[in-house]
Image 1 (cartoon, rainbow, N blue to C red):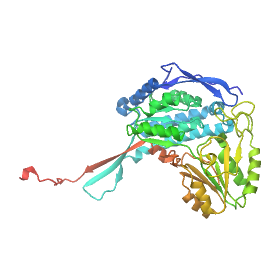
Image 2: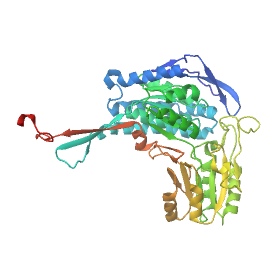
Image 3: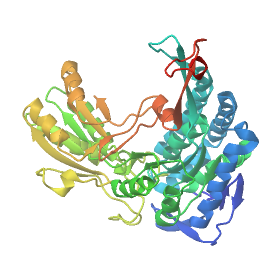
Image 4: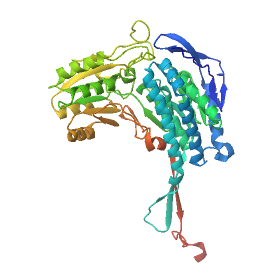
Length: 477
């Protein structure tokens, strides 16, 4: 399928701008290994311009244009963005598929979620006004207190390549809803649709500088953004190693960060399940998005009584997954985003199930970020939980059983930020998303996602006509 990849520049202060050093990076279709275009490569000099533009956007007209404008004003722009994304859904999905390799059907689903997320945060932006000046109950009648929620300021948003536009939206939509001004730095491995988001923002007339989009390499563009003194917060999704570096850079200025990092999530399958239903969810939990998802349930912990029969069934389901070019009808697993073990052409990795692993093996303990599932068996619920929780990570976990009391019990004991019962991987923008341990901290999505970009201010007033009376009054001496 012929897909025309637009040639774009950096998006700074509401305009397309060539990178100061005029550098560009090739864009490669992971299904064919062909160069299909290029993206601008920002450097520290461009970061300076973008941060300055964001600062101006916040202070323009004393903040009344954006930061302190009614939430309904910001909501209007977010809804306009959602409408434009919906209008361009087919084109954006094709660009997503050709850029990062995910099946076209998945990419369509992602773009629909992008529009839904902007709509959702438009609603929350409107609701923010009514929550201002929320009263605080105090034990002394001589004081009254209330709370203001204010935008944190200029935020740096650094996002990954596995859901290029959707992961960007998880950060852009709530940050703009809160009244922040943002600089988005998407992954250099898949930036095309994020640059199209810039064009959408330009078309809907988003005020200049409210959203700036810088593509380029992490060390050249991401690092100067994370360490910039005029950036008030960094929100990052990506690897634990990079997250640690961002946290260290932010620590120098006591800058808040929220981090959504790697995972090695377990899926526990008990002996009372429907084998086919459980097998499909197990396959989906690890092989969806070509296995390149931080929450992938890539450690299967299956009851020993059904292990052999279940694995036989799982292998049949896995062999039935159509691996092809993302644009082929019925494709369910495309190429990984960059060089791997190839089929005839393209960065394709076949789904792999590994049994007979020990808990000390790297394949059991470390994230692969590809369609690879490791398997261990258990005999008791306690053993299953011990295996599940024996990890540095704590993003997602799944439990599959017909005993809902057991599911409830296991859910409470799993050390993860997200638990799925009788499924794996569903994600809704209304529900919180984030992890524990080395999977990061902070929560995206839902109202928690909005709170990520708001600062809480206490305002307390003395309301008595009587003097405070702590010191002896000079007039009575």
